[in-house]
Image (cartoon, rainbow over the protein chains, first blue to last red):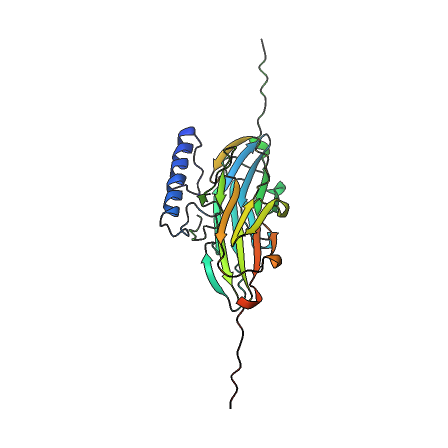
Length: 147
Length: 132
């Protein structure tokens, strides 16, 4: 449901998403196979701060070398990567809940950004991207003259 | 367009069975458990947990893991929220005879790996059959 396209953020939308997450959790706990993609991978949280967008994703077990990040134009963000599985030889699997494989996610950002000044870091399995707003998207104060 | 994947590595899959007193979120991490001849290996996804914030206990055959997520600054306006953040908690009944004094663990890139070596007596031994 939560598409890769930008969705308007409103309290109502938030509640719908929340309800949806709760439902997914219920089904996951009661008989769900737990491997079904709930949202596109990786799920993202995005904030707007004064002069930048902050994009955060949980990517446990990935190194920077397993990850490719592109900004196309001023508003298209692509996250591409692979989570690799390492199994010791001669082993017996008791549980297999974690997912592995390749992923691509393309997202249209709500605010144009400056692709040359993107800052990315991956710490403890958390990817944080800081994308400074494009010059044209920065707010300008308009001075109203009194005649 | 993004490709649909069946990855779902999203770790906070289910709210944990225990609750916090302060009402914060707590999640059950996804795990893989592997058995080899010598040991059990547990891999748990704990994104946002640093090694010093992992609390791991083995008591009376129960392995309890708890990961405290380092709070991340939440400035600005949230434009898109697809996941929630919280601590991780999960417990396992380990039935193999484990040598508790030799349990080791490491935490790297948000993945905790616990090595639970089996007691000598529980390890398989090859018996040579002599020809008479």
